Image 1: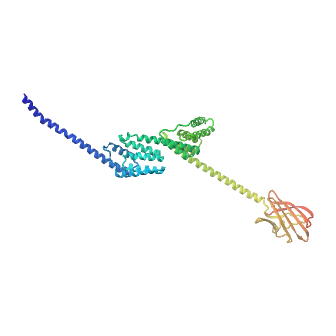
Image 2 (image 1 turned 180 degrees about the vertical axis):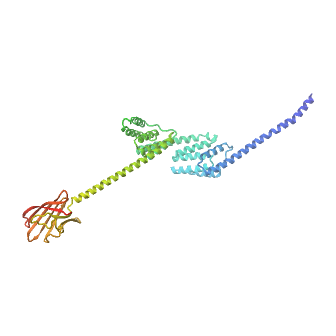
Image 3 (image 1 turned 90 degrees about the horizontal axis):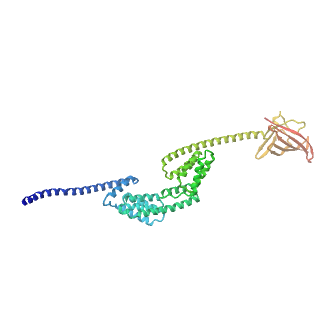
Length: 447
């Protein structure tokens, strides 16, 4: 019996050895497979990085690289080029003294991250530099990349939380400063800056009570505008007052745009919707389409207005031309310039007549002087002291005619309403200034 037990043991021993020996093979195979997988992953990582360096804006590819790098143990080595760049960027950050300097350092850290997208401290330092440059959107984006790439040991340090608190403090201080500047000088650039700051803040500021009061008044007035259209203008004033106190309040821009559109103020409504879009609303897609429509309506309104102005200008020019033409007609009608003949009077001092056009009196204006000429007048007589005021004319005739010794003749005429007659009086004086008589005289315009 004992002998059979021993033999059985001897018989089982080779079997156990046979069973035990193959069991060592899977261990070696698993290790080899793990090593092969690791090698393949690192090769894939290298290929991803090469592609990413050609397309550094490919965020999806960056995410795959970061996830793959975190899965590798040990972590991938940082390339020498990235280490050198990191040292240079760190030196630039240390010596930075202006916003531009800090931004330049952040840009250099970004370039380092392109060389090694899993390089967590490149992201962290870029976030720190952006924060000090006042570019808070970029700082938070870099901080998110740091958290995505950080391994558990790095994430446990709490430096990301400390940097985020610093970002919050900086943004709040800049927001308060921007709000003070906007209050002192409200303008669109300051308004955009405040909206951008608020969108980047972790916690948006409270709406001031004054702004809420104006907003509620605007809503109420806008709702009853059907009863009285003038309420729309009052609603616009209330909304604008609310936006002076809270220029980041998106809902007010939305309602303001609706009232402005209802009034046909399409350009103003477009501006209001543009500010609303800056607040990153949930309905941005629909609002953007509405904005396109407003731009088209504003263009049509501008074209219609330009057409009306053109028509109005043409009308004014036509009226001005008509006025000029009428003035010219009136001027021709009420001018004493032209050729005149005397309506005969017995023993008259004047020469010519209707049947003697060669003896007409020619009244003309030359170089600022009025002249009266007559080819048939006695050579010894002269016409002087000519004074013409619109429809009034006066002059003096003097000379030494044998038939009229030592005589001076003073004539005053008034142009008739139809502009065809000069009617007046001639007064005769001696050289001794003795009045010798007067009589009516008339000149007729030669057609």
